[in-house]
Length: 115
Length: 111
Image (tube, rainbow over all chains, first blue to last red; front, side):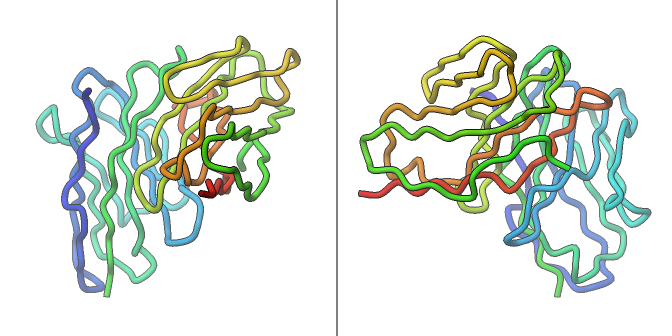
């Protein structure tokens, strides 16, 4: 069964450093998403991406964040200058045509720890 | 904000059916109800979804009331591995169909 994969599973970085989180969505999916979950809190939407551009972003997704689909298979989230409060689980998700009812499938997540 | 309300927590005996309720009184006609679960800090796992008819798959059944203002997820024979946080989500259809997660129901299956 196809699945969303994410690398690395755990990333430790120093405050102020740049990090890139990687995701490989399911191959015939067209919509891509990043969510995050701070420990003990709700899963929060960050950004959606369709047709090679951002289609929606939340207030959390400020200028420090960017997304890219560099090669038609990977989907990346970059945090330019990490802050302590960026420590969280980051989940990538993908879906086919969400308006018709199919679901989004989530990856296992990347745990980001900012020291 | 999430469009759904769920009890904070529930217990269920192993082998018994777990019935998880969800209220979504403001749901509109073209919005689906989705159920996901999250075990520890793993990625949310899709369980089932529906529009207005009851649905069943290998994991669970979904019962949606006729007025669509509430639904119930049924795990027919709960096992210890079903211990998780269960999220009922009405998908946002106004934009990019993102999910807005609430706090979910923490189901504990007891041996």
